[in-house]
Length: 323
Image 1 (tube, rainbow, N blue to C red):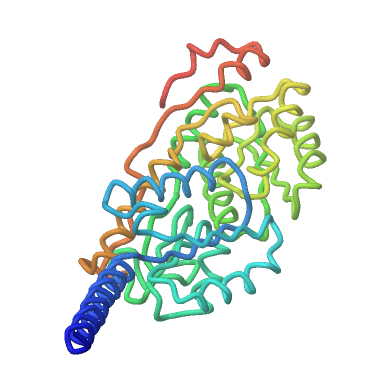
Image 2: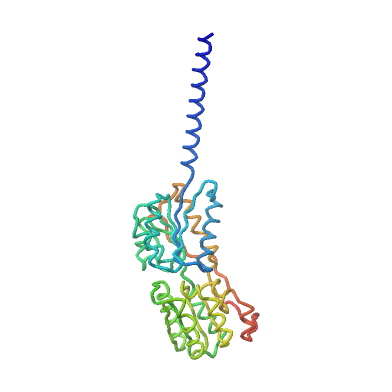
């Protein structure tokens, strides 16, 4: 009787060990399949938020869904540039499978912390100029992604079609943002080639945006704003000034136009983020490496007209057509 009991106990113990081993193997498999992504965003505003939303959609459509087989650690510096380094350090120490840098400052900060972890970026105007990649065609390192370079020539054509008699056009941006400076210079060149004078003013923070906008509104016939994070964060303020001063504002992005501009031929940042998510999924699956993935431009460009703003400026929105 004791022998039978002992045998039963040994069999039971063996069974429990076997089941435990199976359970551990299953858990290990689940852990292996689960991926971790660290995300860094410098500031919250419509365009960058939309890019992040699209990024997650692109991942989900390609088999990586947050809460199921994907963990995302998200950090937002809330326009405090000093926070970017510490946040980057923390994200890298978390040993992610991949990092996402939204906009140039975040992308550069992440690259400063690691050249080993794959990094995809979005909402970056010039990846080569920002020293993130060796070339758009062959990045060569651990970074690739999507550029939000906009069709500035078309945006200036749109502006001049809306205000054909414009003699002076204002351009405003944050000089501390390299991507904004590049776009502002391109816009200034296009306007000068069209025989239009320019007046350029910059702002270092959102606190200066109202004053700069008011100054330009009183001394120019129209205003152009590139895809600038500082001015995008204060788009509603710009919109109020535009209505008060009755001045058309052409913006670099659709989100900026929605919140405070008149019109643009711009990028859909949700769609751009989704493109980036598809690229990230290919890296997570082991199908591609950042070094060999060409930087992608936005596939979708859209004419957007803010009808409420048009009416406030006594402009018929139906007369605004894509150049």
